[in-house]
Image (cartoon, rainbow, N blue to C red; front, top):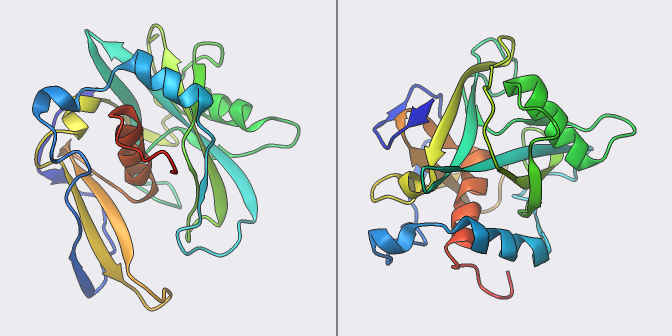
Length: 232
């Protein structure tokens, strides 16, 4: 379950012919000791933060979905829970993602996020405490507006991956994500976009996290490390 930094994994990256390296990590100027997220401070920021929307060049969304970003204290190290999707999934097979999915009729988006987490990894719905939201994303592939809810787990109960959806449950310390050499960006030039797209990656031991999940992890670290501009 516990994952360290590494050389990445077998995820399929549809990199176009035209691409170039992107910017360095927003926290590159910080020392290792300064790259540690304080959960109490992060909770305070998220409680008053108003989430924005990032359309990422996608068409207008056709539906709403939600993901849960579960955080917990791992012996003094803030950590996040992720999942690796099974290869049998029709969409995003084998990719690393947060528990989440489409909103059902009659439920709030927070209820969507916690229901999906219970279905995918066996996390009881009453366990997560909502800290706030990161910026909503609309991706080109899903045509859904993703509402990312950051949640705190006071205690992590035994988790069980759903065999139909989840190949493995991952736990990653935030300090690992912020460590040297883990984060990188690429600029992709694709026919469907008028300008370059910034694609974010985190290289772990056995997995390459990229796309919307990596974008949200980047923002989580930017907010948690106090690097977000006041106007963001």
